[in-house]
Image 1 (spheres, rainbow, N blue to C red):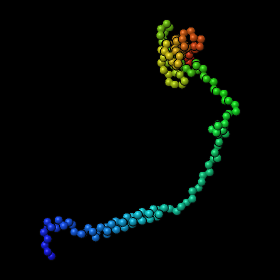
Image 2 (cartoon, one colour; image 1 turned 60 degrees about the vertical axis):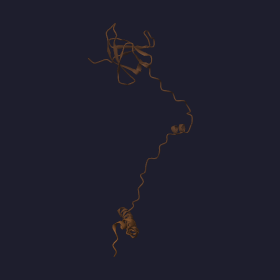
Image 3 (tube, rainbow, N blue to C red; image 1 turned 180 degrees about the vertical axis):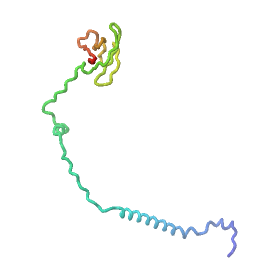
Length: 161
């Protein structure tokens, strides 16, 4: 065997070692992947139990509201439904407390439409144009302005002494 200097061997490039091995390695990797896929599917089939039919549960028949269905399909109601009466203005407010002395400004604790109560001083607007006009010992007068005929009074609930 003839000795070849290292510089010549490097300049000629690597030996043809990689050439014959590449197809063999690629074939081996493909066979391993095929075996793994086959094993996966065999384990999936092996893990499945026998197939059992699913029993259907008898449910209640559908209840259809004929009026709502007709309305959804565009039918006009035969008789116009009466609109619920609007609550009176005084029924929307509830007096829960009063602070004040005669001839002086005062305040009242008033709840509206079931909401938490809030403090209102004399002259403040409670809702829209409704104002607290005056307070007395167990009474609050509400209205749009002093001497308003549409005004109303709220009284504190009686307490058991």
